[in-house]
Image (spheres, one colour):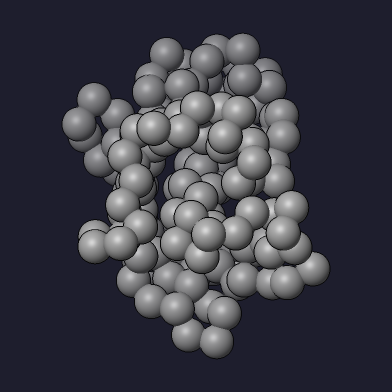
Length: 147
């Protein structure tokens, strides 16, 4: 549904911090959900130090990947892009849980569902999974800012 070229229009991140490779489902009207993925390669720069003998994806980057998917959903719901002068800043998380590590070769499936928007503070229910098994879940809060 969205390839990397379109994703780059909606996220200001670039290598090595662009953590969404493809959007496969997007509903901005009824369910207000997104489903995307990140292909986790052993060539990711963070694997050099986390951990060389037993590489696992850092939890903070899993959270960031979920937040980026939620950001795409927010941009699409508003029908704006960063080029229009709007950004989302990740400002917090609640109910965060990690369930298993993410390893090189995994495809990290990212899902977000819009919960609320009050005074430019957006909340999303997010989850990340690998092979149908949940690896992380959280409520993510983002602040919408006009540049």
